[in-house]
Image (cartoon, rainbow, N blue to C red; front, top):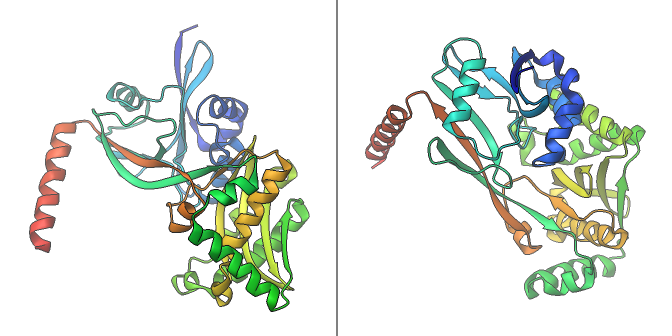
Length: 343
């Protein structure tokens, strides 16, 4: 038996490497959004064109796995959807260099001149100098405080005052605040419906990007989160002012980490910052329970992340070109022309 073996599978065969994919995720980045359960949900909903799983085995162990799609006759990319915070790729090696790309190039069908690997997490992958690395966003995470009172006291004076003022105002107005953390599979669709109703009241409605249980995006979240809930790994944070639902977050659990996938709030209550209040109360609940140690955001770092403190890191893209020097020269020329035109 060869020490190194490559295998190319249609994406419909993902179930055959399900356990191995999870083992590789656990030994590398170890994130919910790269778990086999999450990736299978993405495949079930969004795999509209032929996709291929490329696997590398060393001494019988899976050490590289990626789901690829062909963008053109000469260009391939990692499978990426807007609902997936990271590209569908795992590698035992944290270096994505030209040697690895040359191996990938030999395994995929046809002639490849360009590969795009998108939304890679610098928590695991290094940015190699011999391929083109492009910044995507800065994301963040929060270590759940063991002592919530000490954590709250460490926030800026302005942040503490704004949170306390909002809660005091609600108290004076006789508003009852309630945080619910929904985990039961049979409740998932109902609360994603609530999520969609809030999102549809806001700016996403005009763009047509709001979650709706009857559209493709809504179907994905219902199916994916129900699957997670069946394993005790889904949380929907729901915040109420009296009987009004004013904020909802969709979250999944992996080990001792919660990942916030989606967040929305009722903009008519914006003066109270309900989404911020909900997160503070949820962080307090997790601190007291002691089971969750980390919160992953995976969205672009916003002002509210920094107000509640977060550890920041980069997500980035990689483009490999068969002729890297020519690719960089063409990009340089393209940027120069674009700059001169804008000037």
